[in-house]
Amino acid sequence: MPIDVTAALTADPTVRAARWTERDVILYHLGLGAGADSLDPAELRWVYEKNLRVLPTFAMVAGQGISAGAVTHAGLNLPGIDIDLRRILHGGQSVTVHAPIPVSGSATLSSRVSDVWDKGKAAVIVLEQSAVDSDGKPLWTTAMQIWARGEGGFGGAAGPETSSTVPEREADKVLVSPTSPQQALVYRLSADMNPLHADPDFAKSAGFDRPILHGLASYGVVCKAVVDGLLDGDPTRVRSFSVRFAGSLYPGETIETAVWRDGDTLTIVATCPERDGGPVLTHATMEIR
Image (cartoon, helix red, strand yellow):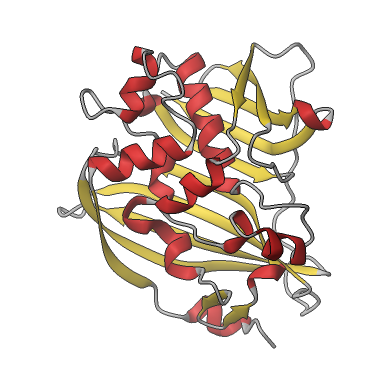
């Protein structure tokens, strides 16, 4: 069986060193569409080394990130897990930021499979990563949910029940983020080289009309939109950001982000207007400072 749950959950964490520079940060932000207006000071702070800021979602790709360490062109290859790329989808993502991410730096990354849930026709694999600096001070913790089609039915726990409650009022803010036709080709240079995001034939074999934008790119686009639109462009105000990926997005389509604020908690829904408001991100919350 491709998934040996006991082996996956009892394996020792994978520990490695990661380093990044301001160029990595700039490339990541470019992959999110930052700098589209190169004369806008608000955009330059994401793509120019002078006064450069770092989005908290950069944690997913810093030093090549957890996806680059686990996902290869052959498939998902982890202790107890060996699954073809065509059978996996990124189901959800969260990041908790313990300290501001520096524009250049290093960290020790520890990655492990923290849960494997049985959804019947599929399995959900939860990959957890923690990062600490050279003094052992926590920088961030992430959790990635991987949906593995056809790998369920092994009799395991189904995982926690989650609900998506949106306030019964108009959104406090609606943010519009166009994407570019080449955006997936730029974003993949930061970490995830999965051919699903570049190769038309591969995408068709996986059931898509053409290559799709990375879920983590949509995640970063929405985070940037919220930071720009509600947090005065200050990424250090984000404590945590958790989402479920609800639908694919083709490069060149638009992400429309509705935000409801309740104190330090933001409820977020991201949709695609070109698809009659079809969902892109749901079950999304951001805790802010």
